[in-house]
Length: 179
Ligand code: PNS
Image (tube, rainbow, N blue to C red; front, side, top):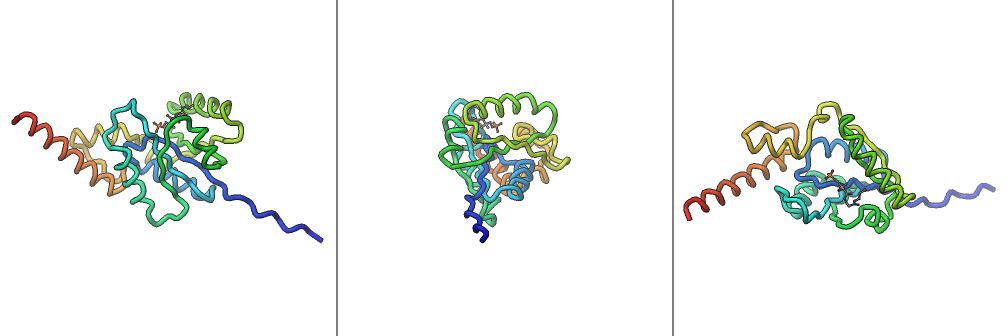
């Protein structure tokens, strides 16, 4: 008699990052992650040290909107050590995107440090589609702020929120000048 296979626990991966804001490169990586894992948790870092353009809540809302039809994508926030968050979430892997060789050194250091801290959590590197290899949240913000087009590089909801944010920043500046 053959033993029936034990029900296996779902394979969970965490895709951590700042996502300030989410780009189509991130979307591409999350979609690739969904092919490999049962569940992908997009984990937005709560980082008091940085001065982000979007608040954590705004970033979470935009990512949820983009993945609202994907039941296997969860959007969450975390602070403290990533590996501890991974342990709490019973994750099997961390996903990181590798765009170019220039990403490698930092990612390699992080992956090895995370492995040292938690041997059970494997880092998996995924490459985005070629058209996103030069896309980064930092460049998107800069190009948009200077009036360049970012259509096709970020989801429409992000483009819309960049416009809203730019208008509110401009409004605040005008208010300060007239005060
Ligand atoms: O999108 P980013 O800014 O490249 O993401 C960096 C992130 C969030 C993955 C990294 O800063 C991180 O994991 N921070 C949590 C604190 C931590 O665990 N640090 C040790 C990493 S080896």
